[in-house]
Amino acid sequence: MRKGRKGLWGISAVLMLCLILLPGAEGICSAGGEGAEDRGAELLQYFLRELAPEKITMILADQPDDEGCVREIYLDLKGCVIGGVRIDTLRMDAVGVRFNPPGEWRGKGIEPLEVLNAHAVARLTEYDLNENLLQKQFGDDDSWRNLQVDIHPGGIYARGNYIAQFIFRLDILIEIFSKFKIVDMQQVWLDDYSVRVNRMDIPKFITDKAVAEIQPLLDLGKFVFPLKLHSIEYDEEAITISSRVIPEPFPGVVYSWGVPGDQAKK
Image 1 (cartoon, rainbow, N blue to C red):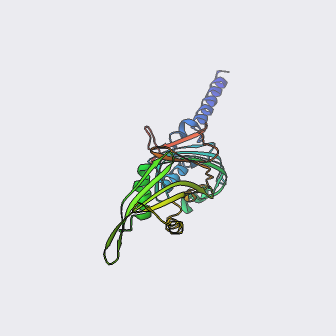
Image 2 (cartoon, helix red, strand yellow):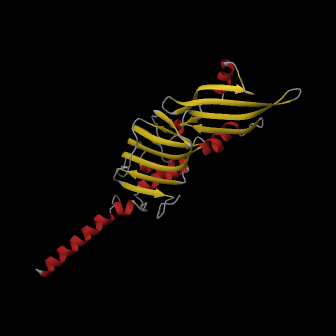
Image 3 (spheres, helix red, strand yellow):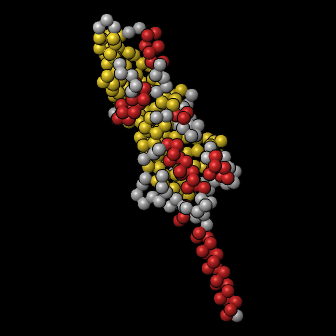
């Protein structure tokens, strides 16, 4: 009888140990997990490569299955890069996500194939618009000087000096008063704009042609998931672009990189 009880306790201890060490257990996966079957850790590495964030928190409703399907993914990113432009903060939620099968990830890489729905809220600061977006659009053009963007609750004000070389050198001050609009739920364009040259208004057909050359200012269609953006808000330091539904974290398997105590490495 004692032998039977000892065996029962031994089996119970083994079962408890197995439950604790399961790949989907919160205690292991929240630290990034290092097991061969920890597909969530591989997804984290994929987002690190694609978006180059300074910090990231990723929550999975469950581990990707053998077909590469995940019920829901939440991302909270700080300082990520999309289309060459730094985004100060980006939070997004994707439902019904299907990647290529995990068996292909090591050789072929990870590829998003299908997303049922995706929502996001992104914040672009005045500093990043000046340091990144203007450099992206005009950085290779030596004709522009003193480019600057100022965000205010009514929209944006941008100015710059254009150096034109004819028989003699002309230093032309160009000013743009504008708002932003969302096009195709993924792109940010200048909208409702007016342009002044050397403090004088110029004909609309000329401004339309000039502005068309720099549209869109930001293309979030280059993001790994197809976002559906809806509104833009302005404050004194930044613009916030969001979908109708604001993404929120949920209980699940948590991974992080770049935050105190993280164990998943870039």
